[in-house]
Every structure is written in C-alpha cells, then in structure tokens.
Image 1: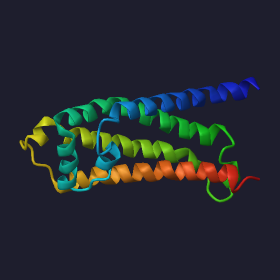
Image 2: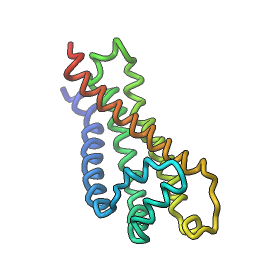
Image 3: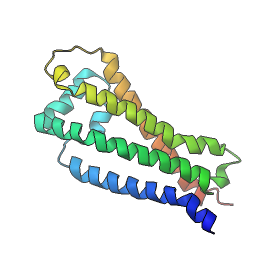
Image 4: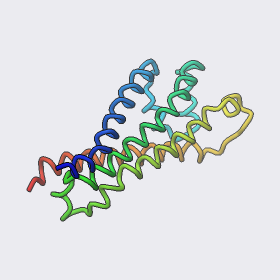
Length: 171
C-alpha cells in the first residue's frame, strides 16, 4: 500500500495545484468580457483586435499578467494527465481500444500547445505589436488560434475518455 501511495502522491499534488491555479485564474480573469476563451478562438488579426479593444488597456494588461501563472497551470495539468494515465488504472478499461500511451501523452501534448498559444499571445499583446510598430503576418494569429483549439481538443478528449472509462467501458 505504501508503494501505491508514494506513486500517486505527485499525482495528488499535481491535481491540487491544477485545481487551485484554475480557480485562482478564473477569479483573476473574471472581469474580462468577453472571456479569455473568446480570445483563444480568434484566428485573424481583426477578431483578435476586436477582443482586445473590448477589454481595453487594463484588460490586456490583466491578460498578460495571467500568462505566467497559466504556465504553472499547464505544467500541473500536463503532469496530472501523464500520471493519471500512467500510474493509475483510470484508462485500463479503454486499453483494448486505445493504447495507454495515448492517454498518458494527451494532456502533456495539450500543455505543449497551450505553451505555444501563451507565447504567441504574449507576443501578440506586446506594446510593439499593439502600437503598430511591428507588423505580424496573419498566420501568427491563425497559429495562436490553432494552438488553442488543439489544446482544448486534447483536454476535452482526456475528460471524455476518463468519463467513458469510468462509466461506459467499465469492466
């Protein structure tokens, strides 16, 4: 029993960190309307600028401030997903359909795309870009939106898989 406890201790810490960071960021970003998710699903300079314009300079600064903490969040959910799939039997009932390695890598890969999205959003909300001193190609905005989309698809797939493994495919 002690071996199982020690093998899941990091998982438990990662899940707690993820929950605390997610809740904290939710409260911190609550004043932004439309939500941060609206910005994540923009794929053009015009759509991106429309969200930033609605937020105003204070909202853009609030968004930029959250990115460092979001880096800790993506690290925590990436680790939690890897450990949940690799050190528990969460996805055991699905292993005949989808290899466990897929589930183990799903959230870490989502976190990689989240990090790419964060870096692009940091760049796209920088003063040089916002003041028009640097012209960025349209593909930069598209890349940020695609990174966000892949991230959310990975997170949703993991959640649906975990739910299915516990309810639909229970052995």
